[in-house]
Image (cartoon, rainbow, N blue to C red):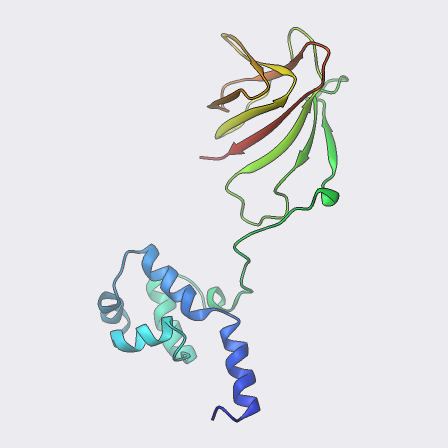
Length: 197
């Protein structure tokens, strides 16, 4: 069977979908053992183990039994495998401006993680340009983290502001209205990370 080129091609094709690792990930996410999954599907734990390790490829009815237990469709197993990482090259990034509804630019930014799919956070390189005493504020869900790379910036809240210099960081609930203003004449650059909760 190993000498059959068609069989080897089929095996390579099935392996590229990563059915076994996807099955194992679903089971571990539910904190379910092989024996328990076997009870739910009517399949033996030994067979399930072989499926997870890629020693055996399931028929569609077998795979459907597993899919029904976890509430996913068959497409879950045949969707193109996503890379566990995303690389963004410096030359691929684009710089944008944010005016927050005004005429003056509040800050300029580059998205550092735009190539990642299903992001659980957003990372930006930001240049703060607004030096006004009362910067425009904004708010959004989740939390925000800011780390100053160079220059100085003030993060303004409704109860005052925090002045930060190079090397300083701040973490806060982003649902609080907040705004930024550059302190001094030197350019201010920072890394900003936001997440939804």
